Amino acid sequence: MREFDLILFGVTGYTGKLVAEALLASPEPGLKWAVAGRNLEKLKGVVADIAQRFPEAASLALVVADVADAAQMADLAKRTSVVCTTVGPYAKLGDAMVAACVAEGTDYCDLTGEVSWMRQNIDAYHSVAAQKKCRIVHAAGFDSIPFDIGVYAVQKHSFDKYGKPSTVITTATRALKGGFSGGTVASMGVLFDAIAEDRTLLRLMANPYALVPGGTGPDKNDSKCVEYWPEHGVWTAPFIMAGCNTRVVRRTHALLGMPWGEDFSYAEASGTGPGVSGWMRAHLLRLALGTLVLSLAVPMVRGVLVGWLLPAPGEGPSERQRREGRFSARVVGECGDERVVVDVSCEGDPGYLATSRMLAQTAVALAKDELPEMYGVLTPGALMGDVLLKRLPKVGVHFKLRS
Ligand SMILES: NC(=O)c1ccc[n+]([C@@H]2O[C@H](COP(=O)([O-])OP(=O)(O)OC[C@H]3O[C@@H](n4cnc5c(N)ncnc54)[C@H](OP(=O)(O)O)[C@@H]3O)[C@@H](O)[C@H]2O)c1
Image (cartoon, rainbow, N blue to C red; front, side):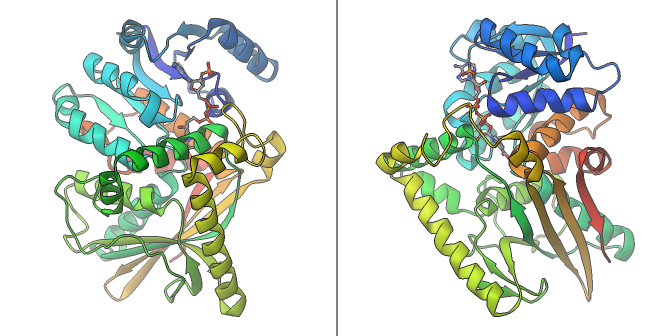
């Protein structure tokens, strides 16, 4: 029996504070949890701030831990059943926490969308975590829960109604309004810097099965073109998150034992609508995405943009921007001659308001729910697809079957 069910690490950051608020806004009966950060004074200040809206926060235990201190990492991991961490960029700051959790047999979840870092952890820890019956769950935020669980929902309905899986699934976004935090910009910067030093990372990230060691299948790398997707009735442009989400979905499939078939295929894109206006929007979006990626890839340009156009670490969308954000996408499965359609939507900024709720629910599910006997470096869809389909609608993340 450990002292806490859950420790939230990184509460002094922009997203970590939102996760604490999400845990307080939807309290889990009997959950014993604490918050952790590297600086006690900053921790006290953040908790006092949260307590103005949620007075019960004042009684949360505070744990001081710096990722550079291995003893503090081990102590944090020993004291709790689950670590939920927003200390990122993960590729730069995340190794020590994962290592400590695996060593202590502590369950773990995070918000990483960094494919190369996830693969590094799969290679280093999947077997040993499985032996220790420990669950390391990456990508439990906007990367990649709406997509991973959206596909899981399509397959669940395909089996329930038609007795077989959908062999081809596509997801097209329909509405997306949200901002960036400094941590997310920093994560992209760390990734681009790593690629500049080690070009083999590009090959790994271009591999559609990057998160399935040795995995192969019918999918190619994500399309970089403007395309018309008839099953959605919309024009599409490349989607910035597809490079992570599609890999996570394919890992979910592999972890579940390939129940959707060896020829299962999955793709994602930004839907821009039908007709000439949809076609024009798709081209504009593709251009904008290319410009954003190029700007972030050049360290000098990135340096100028951060703090001017882009947020610095600790910063992010205002409360009003978070409230006014939105996201919806359609997931379409081809199940023989039938079509299974699930609409996914999030209330509020998907990357922060909805993300903080998704991560909080993943952490609580790890701590409290009965989950399938599955251990190692996992995905939300493989470990807790059914559980999240029940939990997420209660916090504003919906998966609605249309047909
Ligand atoms: N997948 C998604 O949908 C999604 C959405 C949002 C965010 N994210 C990811 O989440 C991560 C956090 O983003 P953010 O905007 O919240 O970042 P942030 O505001 O910069 O917060 C970073 C946190 O890490 C802590 N930290 C830094 N160095 C540390 C160290 N040596 N030891 C312990 N703690 C340390 C910071 O503590 P101090 O306060 O003491 O500096 C802070 O609490 C990023 O990797 C971002 O990409 C992902």
